[in-house]
Image (tube, rainbow, N blue to C red):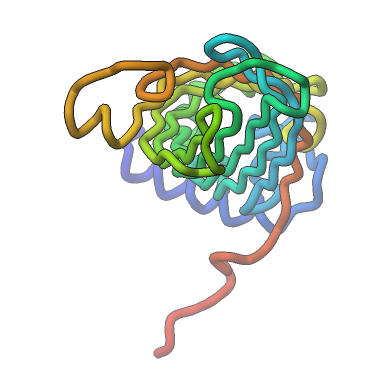
Length: 217
């Protein structure tokens, strides 16, 4: 089958999926291969966890919103003071864009293996890019700004999209001063991080794009 006909049929199935109730199975009795990811158009994620960073750890909270499990926004907040840590910097606020390119690409081309947890984990691989605002020791909050780039991978505790997930995110942060000068003097100028979170994912039908709308004649 050529991509044109297959792609058109697949996108029609996306539209139909958004109108079906959660848990709908295929006609042959097998679970539908999106595992509930297309039972809505938006996924909301809220989680708590910890971050391993230079000189110690920080407690972390995160909020994420994704469209069709493929692209979205994230906000994370980290605080070493909450766990009496000597981590440097003490606090970090980060926000940016998240891109998860594998889900629709694999599903539309029939590469889902119908092994729920495996498919969900593989498709969760995400690229993250955004801005960060640090509080180095002895300074005020958000006194140093910069850029953050990272990768994320998530593991569902259940075999479906909505529910509890373990999240693993890692990346590197650079301060504006380090990016401008190329000089890295301290962990505040450039640092790596690894975050582990327990989060709840909720797929919701919000009609951000209403598939039932028709163009005016």
